[in-house]
Amino acid sequence: EVQLVESGGGLVQTGESLRLSCAASGLTFDDYAYGWFRQAPGKEREAVACISVGVGSIYYADSVKGRFTISSDNAKNTVFLQMNRLEPEDTAVYYCAAAEGGINYYANSHEYEYWGQGTQVTVSS
Image (cartoon, rainbow, N blue to C red; front, side):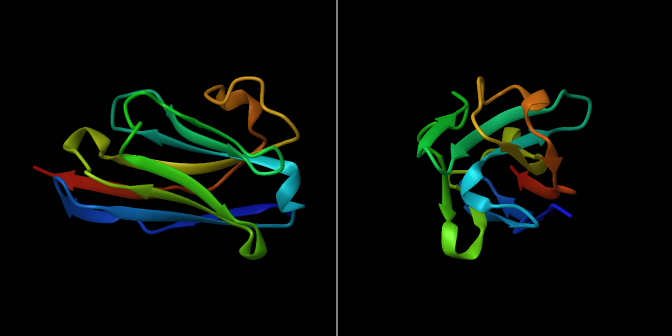
């Protein structure tokens, strides 16, 4: 059974940092691309970043470029999202997702087969 378990969310103030983790199990880690998505209340789910572990490709949404960094620790089957200079607009539930094989478009949520339960990130002004 494939499982993705997110952790690291919390309440921070504007300008502070958080690091989210996504621990993957039940799959061959290197065969997947992993995406971070977020959903704020009343808004649609949006892609934040994606890493294709086997290929080494990385993608970011324009809204987080220069502030967020996605990375992976292949030995620990874990994907990270380092979030710096957080803003109130970053407040959302953050989800980790996994897609086997290649990704045609990192922001297309339908390409991801597996999803975590989400972790809340709240940034106060």
